[in-house]
Image (cartoon, rainbow, N blue to C red; front, side):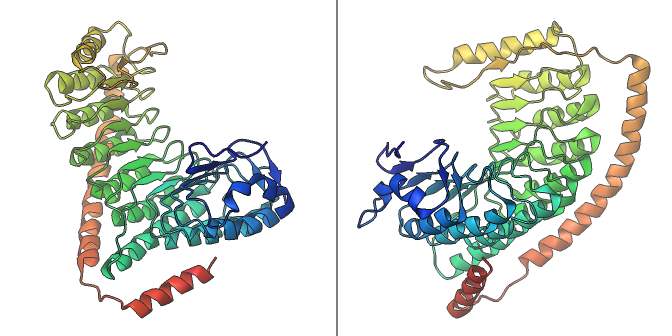
Length: 431
């Protein structure tokens, strides 16, 4: 099957399940890219095929000759390849893409990038100044390789700043998608530092990473708190509990442009959910449209706070709430009232507004019964103990952040063009 070129600026071999081992295997499928001058390709889709080292080496000079290329989908391109094949194949592709000045979006999902294979990706990320959108889902990174990725993004921030100082028009990093990668709490300090260096980030999706509550608190307080323009935060299927809920409640009001908040399956708990919804009730998140809190052990306390926030006008933009799997009855009158409020908003929306979006409350098919009073008293006592520990942590974290802010705001001598060029050359040689 040959490649498609629809629309004309897109070259696609997407999901053709091709096994391209050599240049001879590759050439018949990329004929549209071999013209002189090269075609004005803006989007490249190679996902869903498997590429060997010789094929990648043959493709590299072709990619390097695409100055108009804006996005590259390289997801799932190493299926059935030996572990030893991945670094040289990946290096060939990413080294070539460094030469594409318009390339702002890269998707490398569903490829194995553990400690033994991550080096070419690290080298690319710390050097590719035009990068705006990075998608890394299901790469098996683990906390160590995950921390290396975060450190590379921190280095990228420095490269972007240096490029701006010499007059280049450099976009901010806007999107980070890094889900199903076992990042765990051990890599969160590195990710927090990286996010602090990229305050222009708008979308962060880090679902299903095994991040515990302390790691989530670090990510929120020391990293995401500084991303004032955040529009989407999806950290579902990690762990918040009371520790992380307090952290989230403390920072969420600063994201005034937030449109989507996904904290489902994060064990907010009754008191934790009440804290988060109480923070939303303060009115700093008027534009929030979608709230995902399924399977979070939200009980009547949290539900009451959520209803108060919606009724009080603090969440005027809210359209969709996902509540399944929590600890209140499906026929709770507060659920009915919330559903009615959202339905009124749907009916009152202008024609075409929100078309294609989901509205209302999801199906409440897996609800749990509320705990009895004794169990709630035990939970409250546990929460008070956690609060005391968390307050001490907050004081220490705030002191550390003040020191870090002072260091980051200290004057730094600008490097001249020659030094910047030397740094770029050094980074290129690490690949």
